[in-house]
Length: 256
Ligand code: NI
Image 1 (cartoon, rainbow, N blue to C red):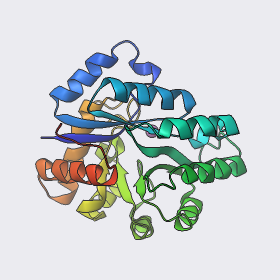
Image 2 (spheres, rainbow, N blue to C red):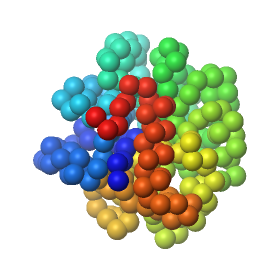
Image 3 (cartoon, helix red, strand yellow):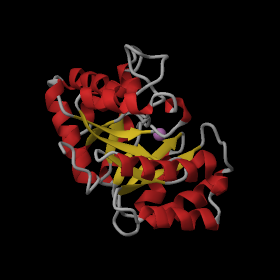
Image 4 (cartoon, helix red, strand yellow):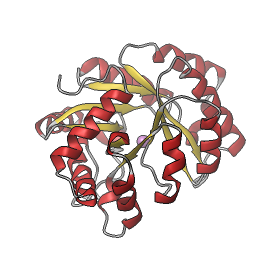
C-alpha cells in the first residue's frame, strides 16, 4: 500500500531524539511522500531544511492562527522568501481558530488574509479552521484559490460549502476513534477525488496507538478507517488520496 501523509510536523521537538528513525519507519510502511507543514517562522524554516534533506519530504510555510501575533512585516517577508524554495508546494498552515483563541480574532483574520496573498501565484493553501468555518469560508470565497481543509471538523452538513470552493478535505486520526461517527460520515460523503489523509503528527494519533506520539507510518490507520466507512479497499483509498495529493500539491511526486 503506497501512502501520502499530507500533513506532518516532523520538525517539532517531539521528534528530536529519533527523527531519522521515524522517517525510516514511514518509508518502510509505504509512505511515498510527506508534506511537512510549517506552523510558525521557525518550523517553516525547519520544514524547508527537512525537505532539502529528504527527497520524498516536501514543505509548506506559514504561521498558524495561534501565533498570528508573531506575523510581523519582517516575518511575512521571510515567509515570502522561504516560499520561493522549489520544495515549498503550499502556504500553510493558516486560518482561524476561535476555539482556543490564542491570538485576538482580528489579528488572526489579518494574518490569514496576508498569507493568502502569499499564495496569489496559484499555490494551494493548507487551512487550519476550528469553530470558525463561517468566516473561513467567507474569506476563501473572496480569494478564489485552491487548497485543503486540514483535519476537517466542520461535520458532514457543511461539506457542500467546502466542496463548492473546489477545496479538498483531509482526515486524520480522530476518524478512527469509536465515537467519531460524524467524521466517518464525512469520510463516506467526500467525493473520492477530493479526499486527502494525514497524521498531523505528533498530534491526533489514531487507534490503536491513541494517547501516544503520532508519526507518518500511522497514516495507514486513517486510510483503513476511511476505507471501512466507504466500503472500499484500503488500497483504493491509499491510491486515490495519494493521487489527489499529487494533483493538489504540484511538484510533490509520490512514488519517487
Ligand atoms: Ni498541523
